[in-house]
Length: 192
Image (cartoon, rainbow, N blue to C red; front, side, top):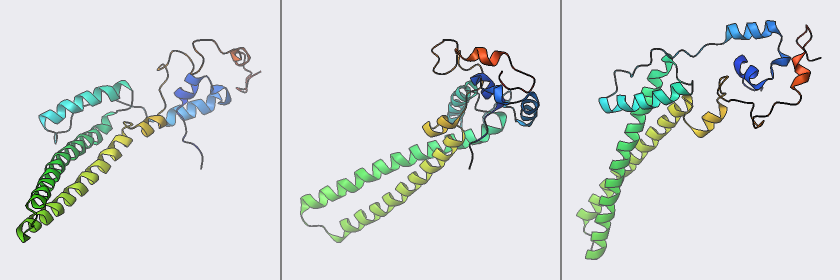
């Protein structure tokens, strides 16, 4: 299985376009889907607080040239999943504290009656259900974040558009000493 095809603009920004002919470049440029981000708006299913978070994240993602108009719903779903995860986390912490308190009290009394055991069992079952809901919300949140390039591994797969860096990576601002060989190209698009 081969690597994902890099955009032509990225190849040119790297200075490695010498292996592509003009025809191939034109063909690939016509086949690439441009990122259009001129109508970014928060989806209607978000609350006012969530819309504020949407605007913050959208601004950062547009600046990185990752978010397009078509991605607004995915970002909205990410925010909803993140809110769910946080909500379930608060419930899990409260239930955990309640279970621990009941266990402490039953140990201190040294005689656990069946009522206390039943309450501990019910709270533990409820706690397990909310932990599962929290885990599911986390998985959905991570999936949306990965699609949008908001995780470490997803950002590693993103290629920067041209002009994002001032010089070639690893060059330290110095001119590539081999670039003189690629300045004079023959008609076939190959270096002389």
